[in-house]
Length: 349
Image (cartoon, rainbow, N blue to C red; front, side, top):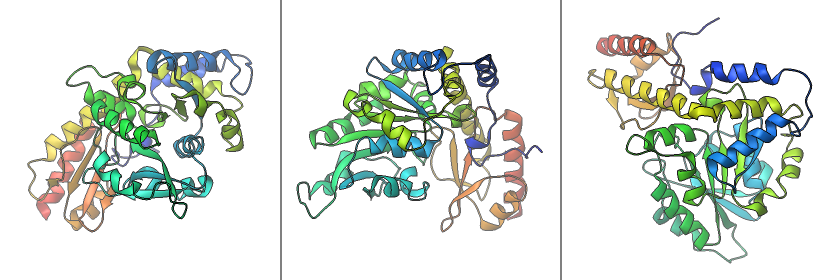
């Protein structure tokens, strides 16, 4: 049964037709298992074309697994991972990173979801002290959970800071495509510009939120991190026997910049939604949308009534801030319908 227009998450969207066609094509006849097939090899080669020759891509099922296993390749149990307090690994992964890594997550409060060297510097005061977990990885989210975007220069500054302090830089790129599409509005931004070229050491490359049925990629830009990862992935229960079905989706996503088209569409729908509700009395946009998320403060009664008709999440219950997400599949008609409902309910008070 189809849902009403949904603004809860880009995970609610279906599969892009080109991705579905790639899955069907990969289903033709037998193929070697566990990534030894031609499709997987072609997809890994395509990642090198897109992200640079140093890029070593490994496919897994889930975003949480991509983050946890990437971080596992970068840490030992006495280490710490520095991340924003709003980071997905800190808030929405049910403690999986800390359980499986044995590491401590050190969360950093930020005004906009973005880490900076200045915010991180106080967490390095106990480097070398055996009584304290040792910071080993800085983990950033691109785009952040607040929909904000790191520029290439900001990522480079973090990479230089991390490397200069004996640390590594990990990027949770669940919405990497949305970030690159947003940055491309000023000048063309390729995926490698905000990953490999900016000093990122390991990347969790998201696919599910940008049109895939399932599957994520872990990409390393340092050979020493990639070397043991096949064993880490297997032990982490993420070695897909029929890997061609994950790889085929990424091959299609990276072909002809489908990732950019999907992400740009999602971003555009968020901007349209923000424009449509900006002048409604009782609706306050808490920040300009940069990617495919719109954050707005509404009266509790308005939120409750809207949620009987549409799916979306309350981001901050204390401040009555909601989050409306768009996807590649969101249409202008759905935005118009939802914005009209917001207006109608807000005017009731």
